[in-house]
Image 1 (cartoon, one colour):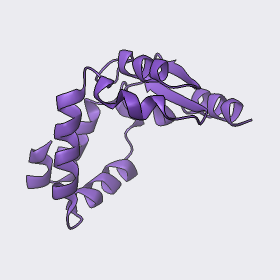
Image 2 (cartoon, helix red, strand yellow; image 1 turned 60 degrees about the horizontal axis):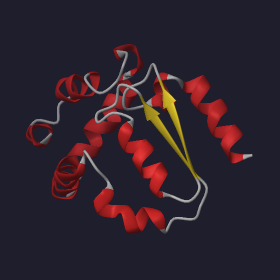
Image 3 (cartoon, helix red, strand yellow; image 1 turned 120 degrees about the horizontal axis):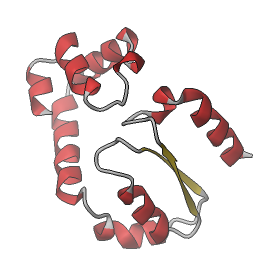
Length: 130
């Protein structure tokens, strides 16, 4: 990921995000332009890289944050693409730790079910919010 900050070109962004989604047809030019812009913002590298490193260090388990998750009382919905890395086990584990959480797995999605399965995502989200 840090290489994206070295060369935040549209081609580099597109290449990275095509690996994160289930179908490259969902990756619009506008999404690429927005990400490219975000990567060029002052302080972006200093903010994002430590977050991603922390994520990589804990990607197999959120148990390190179990006490924080257990304290969340708000009704929560995890929307997770089945092809997102890491897999859905993380969402299920987090939901198990919480008092009032649900998990919805989107079988035809990677990182962005809200884009890759937009209609189903919107229906599920609206039902959750009712």
